[in-house]
Image (tube, rainbow, N blue to C red; front, side, top):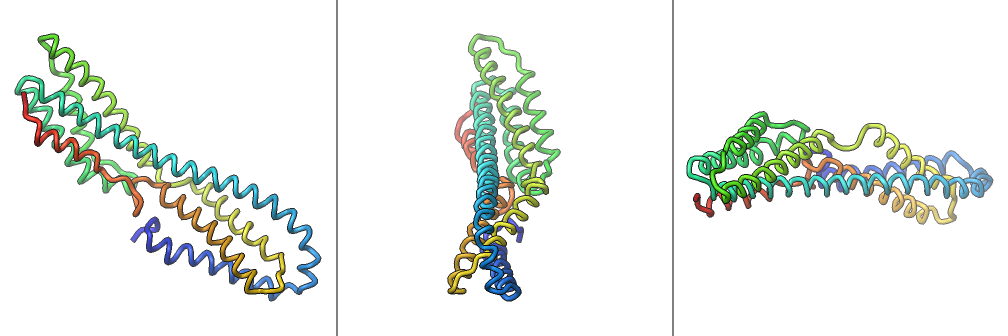
Length: 260
């Protein structure tokens, strides 16, 4: 079970953060007397407004960036699957030998990419077999020599689809190789969260149970946002990941659209 999974997040990480924040509150309340907290409460309130605002801005920007990266990866996969589907569809209109060769390479590539390369991307790796098949596909398309205007039009369309296919594949692998956030960003996020929650310890409510509830809710909100970054930061791993479902259209074309 990986760290970016639902059980780990909702049963370990988030409850652990909340429990740690409550333990910290209890320790501070035991070590500081009531008059000590009263003396620093006014100053702490102004500082907390500054710290809370700065941390909220940083946290919000990184959450948006992680979700944007996830959306970009999804669109890239759709673009790749659409491009290879177009190549397969156009290949069905080419002469027999060329059509069979291109379609057989596409079938092999789709199988290799979805069954072998996709699991490897969870750890930032790629499949040499899938790359070799992608190269073979490009060579097969480029080696065709059109002999009529109709074939020239199909060839031009295939060139555009091959270019889109290669660009999308390269972007997909680049995103997969950049797993999660840099360590520095995690350090800033975690340290900022600890400081933000820690500032609540310097406010004293007469009802200690109410202060426990407020601190727990604040730490839970921060932990949920951190978990959101963790889940969406790596688009090809964990329980929230992009699957190669779009390639099913390519399989449909290969199975249902007859060769010319």
